[in-house]
Image 1 (cartoon, rainbow, N blue to C red):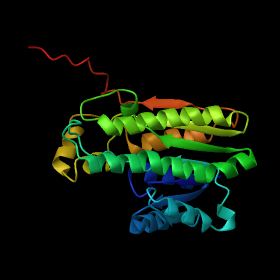
Image 2 (image 1 turned 90 degrees about the vertical axis):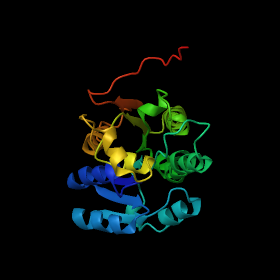
Image 3 (image 1 turned 135 degrees about the vertical axis):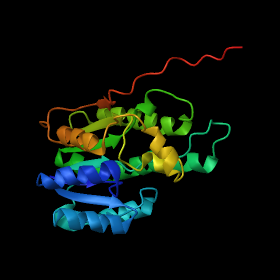
Image 4 (image 1 turned 180 degrees about the vertical axis):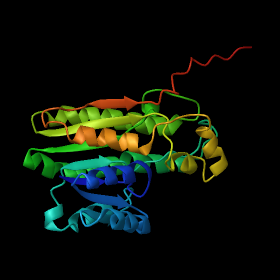
Length: 248
């Protein structure tokens, strides 16, 4: 199996690379930080190939795929993991630039990667696209605004892929995690405020990157007639908030 993972320089992506590689699969690891890609490839061995790539660049995506050696071109599993949240301010105070970056990465990058890889899967009659969504795409919360909207897009895009791919042998899944520690997610969202990021997980036992990687591996190794449309995971310390009510 050949697996292509975007956002593989840390967190979910690196954990996914490890579980697929250690189980004997060939893995293409993509990301912007070449030093981290090289280090991960060095750790995991010759079945892991670094692909320096920024998913917000359409030209970079096509150039990277075109440059793959022939034995690496028939991608069996595409994991659209690259994504980010920026900021927690309410919509009327949030930076438009942050919104644009989230849309460019979480939506445009994901669909560009998918459109680039999907035709060869359909031509072969097999393949799997795993998209990384979030519970934020299902349930709104203060400060979630555009991040939550991008993940709702991921959910709906994945379901619409299923509608288009019926009978092709190509599968599509949305993985929607809740609170997850051990990644750079909150550090990026809070613009490098490590103390504030640590407080997000204080006193909790959150999901781990390995939990999400294990879920992706399970989905990818199911029999080819089984499609997991969407799977939502939360740690037991997380639940649902009551409706907000403003009282006089």
